[in-house]
Image (cartoon, rainbow, N blue to C red; front, side, top):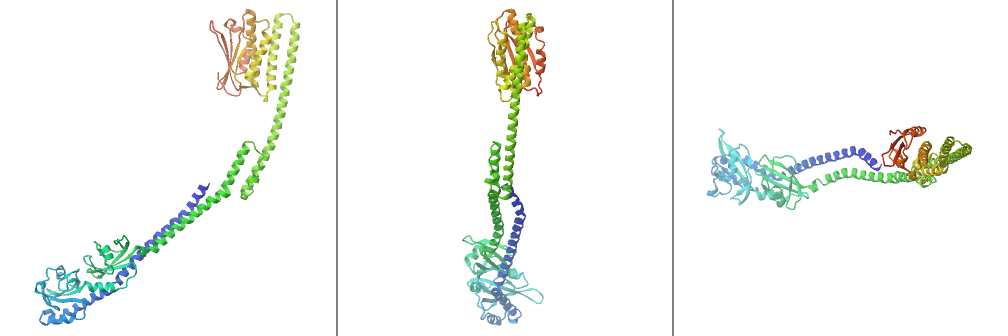
Length: 551
């Protein structure tokens, strides 16, 4: 019952649990999207100082683009470039011709490094028509890593006429990055077009997170781990076209802490509610239903063993009202059963008394008839008539014997087969063995019961058979040794009579009453007789006349 209650509760809670889990998953997705947007916004917001430096560099180069001295690379070019470089954070500004050779510069450039045509940034700027910022590289004049801001120049006919180049020291960008007040658990890093870290607010974490191939143009949140194994989420935004990027990272524990707490709460609370509900159902079912059902089951088993005096309503005084009503109903049922049982016992006792009285009177009447026949036989002198009266008297005494046996047992509808055969054999021996060398018959029979409808015809059949055997022994003056056996088969009983083969009779000498008794018993009679061997008479009949039996 408890399992069914819990299963019903699970089925009832399941839709809400699925809905809650879906809502929690949706919130986590929204939290992920919000975190991604926040990191991108933070990345863009953190690039303002660097973007200003780069915008100022572009402004300087745009301002010099149309200067005649600078375009011509004349003697005044260096003077103009020095003026543009004064009070700026840049390392140098130069004018290069179409072959990548420095024509003039704000700072003196040694002759061995004037040719910059072999630099990757020069190849890039010679193939572009707009302002660009190179990846970081070592600047021999500044003696540090720099970013080169370059503006290609073109003649009036559109042919390439060299470029203006301005060096931006990485230490300048790093100082700007370190001076910025970053929220706790966040890291910002400036990346060049190759994905290398130009500057960062935390060099160690930045190298661990960004010092590997990264898709700079990817969208959404990316994940990485620092040297301590802490998980970070970061987003990348463009600072200046495809030339410079900013990466902004935040620890997962700080970024999704409340999202995970919210997810855990949305999942754990329904589970906790279900667990409490399961416990309440288990406890309630056991305390208010199951233990009382077990108590009523014990009462029912006691009633099954006949202990109807037990009153279950007393033991269920603390049970719920419905259980108390059921207990009272069971108590009333027990009272009714006790009253009916007393009535049935009284009726059964009365019936037994009446049956015993009937059997007693029938026995007495039969014995009176037998005595009258015995008196009459003494007055008859003709031997045949006397023998007929004697066999009739024996038959009546056999029927009286069956009623006497029925009178002595508790159940007056069945007879003990062993008792019946033993006393019947003694009766027939006393009746026929006078003046005959004969021992009492040996009886071997199981203590099974047979119905009254079987006992009477069986006794009469046995009288007919044994009377004929005794008469033959008297006529032939042959000693007589009888064996009466009964075998209890599954659905039938075999009654066997063994005697000496010298007493064998012809088939036509059998009493005319015996076949009638066999038919009344619904049995089958067989004679087994071989020269020199005892004769065996076998009567097989069903144990109950009401069953269908085939001999």
